[in-house]
Length: 538
Image: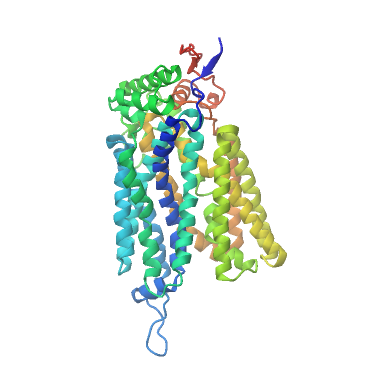
């Protein structure tokens, strides 16, 4: 009998009614990534605006010129660092709250709460009359973003069929560049305004993606896995039939998929452990919390499956590697690289910055398309290896030639190559892989933990990089080259392939096999064309 694996799903037209509905549902969630990308491009442009610096210079000790007025020097370096990093502080502090909201009230409602906070934050910072208001706004922005960015990819991954999970969840993170492009365009357009509207308008428009999300979440459904976990099986069944089978309740694949979801979640409920216990009961967190108030808790390996410890390690690696691969280093100093290459005109630099974002978006989309074809592991290994190479070449050329003449143009080419390879491999993986490797009880809080480590890494980037570049210059690139080589070792040895498996397949495999056998394990969940499930082989 010819069999068809459940993970592949029944062959459906990419433009069937059910698929179009699912595209709409997931697109609403993807909008949240654009908000995060908007902020990533916004603040660098705002800090360069004379209108912004002129308005806030009275809060710093600016030099006084002969006519008694102050130069528009803007906020001091320390205040600027605070404004930039307070967003990450809000995200870090939201870690326990975001996971709780996703599990308690659902992924959709958590997105709505996060979007509402972002809208309030954008209003506060756009109306700011002193630095404290900007800091309050950006703190709330980080807090709300953390909630939305935990809920959104989780909803997409739990809703999508396995055969399309990589492309849909990967596309979510690609929207980061869409938001970044919008911010670059808006700030370029308001740059010539003589009033404070030059920076207030871009700060206020940061609420736009969240307004779209908050307006549309009422027209989308909740995650089918959350519905099952909250004893709403009939709603989950109807949703799966609607999205994955075009309303055909006799579809054998959807029947097997629903059975697999319900059985897996029921088994997890019987364990009766909290989702946070699943996360912290690992060797890594044991060491971190040993001298904390949790010192008296002794975690037994016999109680916690090895698979959960392995999941958490992969989750932490994704959070750290996505920020410490040199991408923030190169991005932060792109204007300096262009100046050293002989490109000093501000408008030209801004144009190149826009082109870099378009290039990154194109490469990220390409990687998202290929990730379900080539697989997660080959893509990230290749991307990490090549990004390491181009970052090393950028370091060598900077050391030898200082970025002048034709060698400077070559440096710009290395920047494009580095960014392109990073975006194709790591951009889709950052949102997709953590959700795939985490079990349902771990998923919401696990995504919050992923965001926690990512923002810790981002926080370190914001404070350490300027100091290091000032003191050791191009030699700081060597730190990232070595670190990227370490990343390549880790992803080659420990990252496992998740392509073509349902989330429940992955739960079964992580729990039944040792970590190194995960990739080679047989797929346990399969269904024949007449709907009969094959016996499990593990």
